[in-house]
Amino acid sequence: MKFISFGSGSSGNCYYLLEDGFGLVIDQGIGIRSFKRYFRDYGLSQGEIKAILVTHDHTDHVKAVGAVSQEHHLPVYAAEKVHSGMDHNYLMSKKIAEPNKHFLMPGETVVLGPFTITAFDVPHDASANNGYFITTDSTNFCLMTDCGKMTEEMCRFINKAENLVVEANYDEAMLVTGPYPLYLKNRIQSGLGHSSNRETAAALASSLSPAIKSIWLCHLSEENNHPELCRKTVQCSLNSVGCAAELHILKRRTPTGVFEL
Ligand SMILES: [Zn+2]
Ligand SMILES: [Zn+2]
Image (cartoon, rainbow, N blue to C red):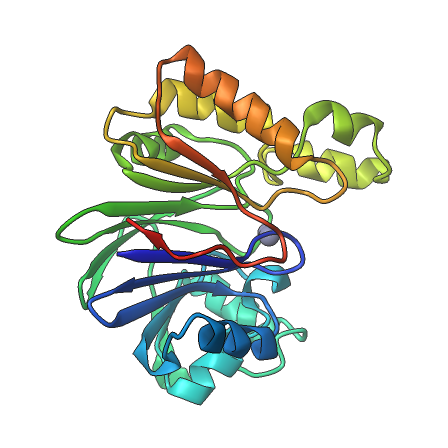
């Protein structure tokens, strides 16, 4: 399985998995022109995209979902409320055609080509928010973003993960002393906002199993986090439990290389 992050954070999220010529886009919140350029630059074919999974209906995750779905007639999988949220999101100008709307509720599993995909609930202040646990014949991949808090169920998926994308949005001291207005600081910390470096580090330390190979920290805040601080906080926690997984920090606006999982 190949994995690429095309962008991660409030300016746009988009991830790509490719296995046996079957491409799966997870969220599409980056500009459509950049998306097409990245495919060209990587020598990838948009014709290989077979489906789109959506976590939640905030614009940084869905801005171009309708555009990509329309252009390639792609099915879009998301929780039912997230589909209605996308219908009503006026910043998502192109909409998903009715036959391409597929509901994937927490607890449900769908098989798409080589991928077996199970959705689970991630607390966040969107219409709903799915995490995804995706297995192939050779490995698995788990993604959870915009995590208001790390629930027991989420920790059970962390425990099974070999490859894990998980949010580490903010440093708690930077958020408290930073420039955001109080209501926004409260929203981020509310349990329906975002996860801090410390919360993510603690969940990883308590839940990771020896099966884990690689961790990508995603959705870092520009104002309330710093990549090296984030890395240090999580790496310390991994060291404390003897976890030797590779740790990567996803860039907000720069695509990664192609990871072979
Ligand atoms: Zn987001
Ligand atoms: Zn969000």
